[in-house]
Picture 1 (tube, helix red, strand yellow):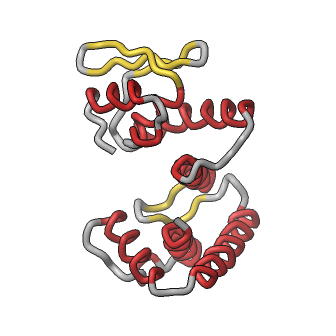
Picture 2 (cartoon, rainbow, N blue to C red):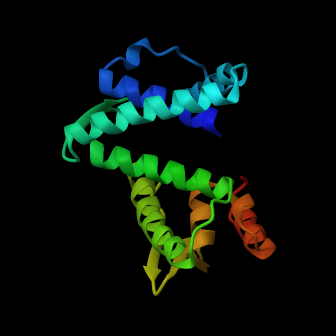
Length: 183
């Protein structure tokens, strides 16, 4: 996990330094880039990978703080609002927090789920994959293939992130697989 996050920080640093064109290319787009970064770090001692991630993360966060949330940074898709890049990164951390089952209180989890639903709908729209869904009373009404589904936030997030395996409820995993989510 830390090898993946450290690879992400290499990208974030390149965005700050305007050196994206100097990053090693990898076939397979971002997935290929990540696989290469993890493969390279697999040969390193775990503590070294952790220290690399921490150092890169500190540098990037400090630089982003100096720029301010209203700044635009260079990204692989061109200039992009820093505020939105931070949202993307927060979602990435939340997804991986689910992967490793980070413990949080029920109140913290509900707050996290609310912003993740809002962000997930925004990101899907931004990527041209608008999701036909409405949030009402702590649930999501999803319209998919001419049917309507009433999903809790956890299930909806697993739907958006293509991670049915994160659901503890087998019925929820089955439902997502029916909806075409493969994980």
